[in-house]
View 1 (cartoon, helix red, strand yellow):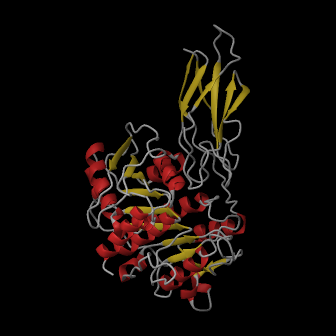
View 2: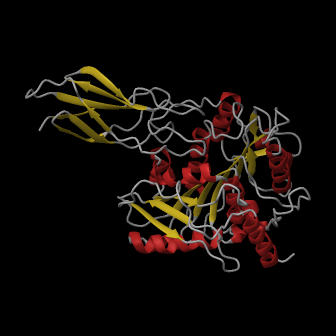
Length: 453
């Protein structure tokens, strides 16, 4: 069946189900944080043209204010279904992912595809069905909005969850020259047809894609140790994809989350350092140059579902059956992660900035710790502890964090503000306030202080 015929058949099936994929969606897709600089947003209506995206889509981007010329784009791609698609509306506002992007002079982009719950997710998570074209179009349009036309041509670092992992892996396979690295959480593209899932089209594996670092990141309850249930097929699909890529020399690894099923858990504490290492190695030194080859002379190897990694040159056996880890540091983090996800950090977070007080209202700005993010802030008044903000971060899937977390690894709405109202302050009395950032391993920043106006 040709692509267009198959596409029309899917469209017709959706209409018979009472789902019109070309109709603009009602809530939850119309509620999202306002996009004022350094945030920008474009939205495209659904299309009924062949090879175009049949769902409406929002693309929100954050651009570090201090960056004159962008070097790349970090993409945070949600998974399938209305809940996951809705979560994409806050992805660009995540302070921890912004820290990664800022370090490398990159933008942070979060798509949100307006997929009806009962519609076929393949119509966006397979990039050949219009989402690749829409994604590249948004980079051009957001580049014009933001005054960064280089967005249209810079490399991509891709993170994807579930259907987003399918999308990110698919983008590696069809645009390998643009992708610096790809993290595939609980989802991978198919390299051979699956008779049980005829709607999922197989990809081919080009030679150039073998040089793109990829990490498969399933939860152990997705078929590794728990063999039944809704997501039991995730690991077999990951295993096939890993074996196909690695057997040809591809730079691919597996990091099994030992605590989770399909939820994202604590994966960001390995994903962000891993992407950091890949971006450091691969981003071009000069604008317009090609991605640099990933260094391979210091690689470590590990059994895909094991817990130990060793220096590649010391491994005795077939290295093309083992996960490929780019360095000793990443191998050490990987070993911690696959054991209990409790990756350590010995560095404190950056101190808050711009602490200001108006009446009894304290506000501040802060950046996340690259290694461990932000858990909370401690407020002191006149040198004495006053409050923590929030009193308890919310994350049912992993470490509590300041912005709270949804299933697809994005902040909850409404976004948590950096503000505290001191209801016990004495009227007309000046106080000195200090704000301290605390990362998710409990390390505190230096305090930043201010006085009442």
